[in-house]
Image 1 (cartoon, one colour):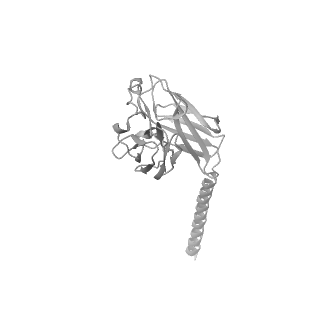
Image 2 (cartoon, rainbow, N blue to C red; image 1 turned 60 degrees about the vertical axis):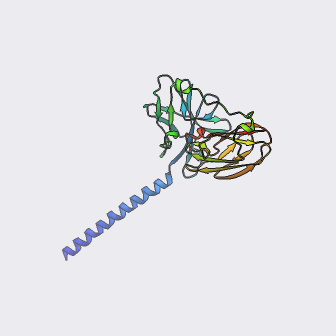
Image 3 (cartoon, rainbow, N blue to C red; image 1 turned 90 degrees about the horizontal axis):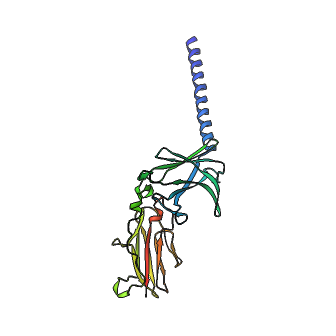
Length: 264
């Protein structure tokens, strides 16, 4: 009888322990769910020529880190968060919250000098607010990562610009403009980056994303595709028009450009 009582007492103790453990795990899960995490979004821009999205920088320029921090549960901006940029050089940059244009977000500038090592500059962004934390890292693909180049490379001669004054008979005119999008470039079926069309005639512009999610806009012609598809338009006057990605797709977003040349 004593053995039975002892066994019963042992089982009772084990049940109490199991219930306590379960309650503890449930409390931890509930706390974690209640606290949530911080969601960080952002990009990098160059100081030269205004706030232009960029991932390649040279001495004399500044990398401007821009980030937003949201409460993962409410999707509201967390204005009092502590936000920092951590560089692979070992440096930590404290970001400041403020008004920029019509919006509010966190910003910090990092000057690129002749002493800044060339090559890939890895970084991450962390945010903390009370018990909430969050981290942002760029995609681990070369075009998404920051690259520091020497002044000589940055000043290398560029390709000759295309011209809208070209004789239509001297260039290949094709009113069907097929754009292939990859991380992070636009090109045609044969790798071309410039597309010639004739003024006053309908143009059929198509976009197909083979890597990543992209859109395309033609500056000055009110033409925009926010995803893969086709759009038709008729350019009335000759001119050169920039085609750019209209969906932010990573640090290499600004490299996604091509040229539409309308000739008479």
